[in-house]
Image (cartoon, rainbow, N blue to C red; front, side, top):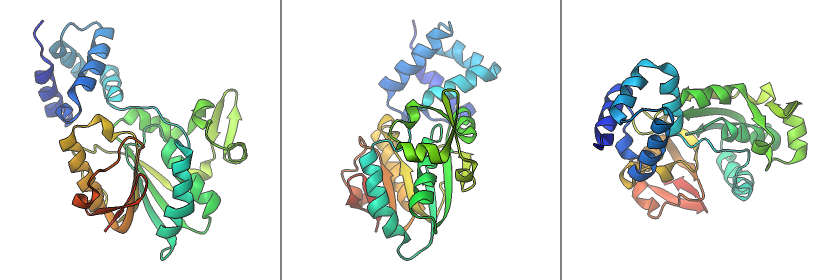
Length: 257
């Protein structure tokens, strides 16, 4: 069979503005081949034609581009550093915070941020922008309904205080939603916000090529205020932060120079 994956990536970029060649090819091609075969298409070009004519297939395809595995307070020790050191530092001379949860998936991360600030910094005024490339996960995020698995790292008192349980599902308090704006955003193509105090982008960039990661880190740096902080995932250490005008503030936290 002719390998038409490269032609497929060109067509996807032209139609959707998504450059699949900026993702690690081996991983992305494997994931999309599995999805294509699951739907019974013998080639990527035939699959692309189907995507253009079937909205549900297109949504499923876009969903497969994102890694929608998330939970509240994922890697709790890092969130403790955020609570005990980073947020107090950012609030020291300013009672207002602009936060961007980039590639937010189904919303656990921005809601964790809103919950933490509500619980520990109630006097702070906060605006949280939560973005993802996938409209389907954004719609789930806006609903704010989660399984018990997503809440496994969340202490029980917070679970009881900020969630309503219905059957096996937990619905987040509407009070936590009011400071969050959900919006579609492509890290590889769209304009970035500006004057941001804190950017949280975790466990996403490992799927991009080194070239794409460098561009994203530079864009994140440009988006931050001076002394603003970028919070990345446990597999995404920046080995030369100075090239992006960033300094290591703590493990996986980088501060704009």
